[in-house]
Length: 271
Image (cartoon, rainbow, N blue to C red; front, top):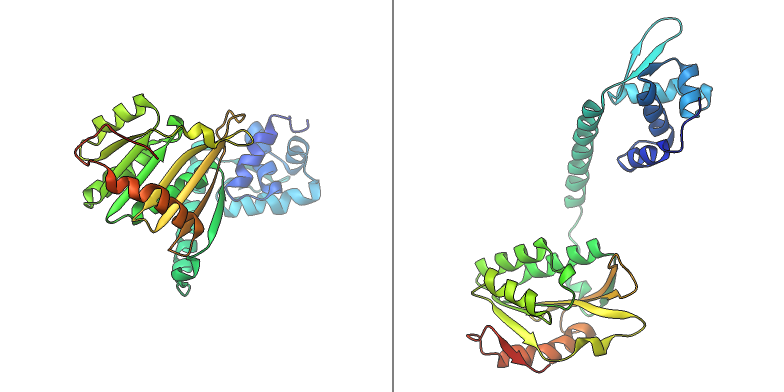
């Protein structure tokens, strides 16, 4: 009996959490039959029989496989919950060790990043960079969103933290429903309704999705493809007065923020 096609997804997922391809094939195959000899594992997992013993031994060392000595030797996969708990503990331990090693490296000169424009691809990566920028804002945080789907719980949380730090928070949205939600959530923030039609900035099927500026020193500008149902985002970001993206957005947005009536939550200003 050879491994079924459906096993491929499980094998791929176990590889993502640190198992080698052979380890993943062996564990998934063994989990299907519960227990088996090297010959049976070879058949169900499509593994070379000569490799089954050392692969099973390595899984045994990880606690994922138990071995019954006899003739022939029999191997048994631990239960799913037990396996996941072991892998989670191992992953956390390895991640902590990696973090300690990374923190032990000499600190880079953060000023060396000033004046450059950096590119980011993927919504998760864009969100993480936006969070980083927002977390650096001490005196002012500006956020503009044209696509309501990209304003996530993380965005709300970062705005709350900035307000708690005493920063002036200005949130702009072209969508009326999103602005209403922002006013309800952040009564102390300035909610801005920009009058510029940002759709005129589209090109090659892309649309501006979010703009984040922290203390007018760091800026991230992101866009999404209209044709992409998954809202795959790309972004550029920069830090410092030498960065062209910072200079551009500071010139375009900064003066408008200065002109806002901070007591008028529904302020409409041209941009």
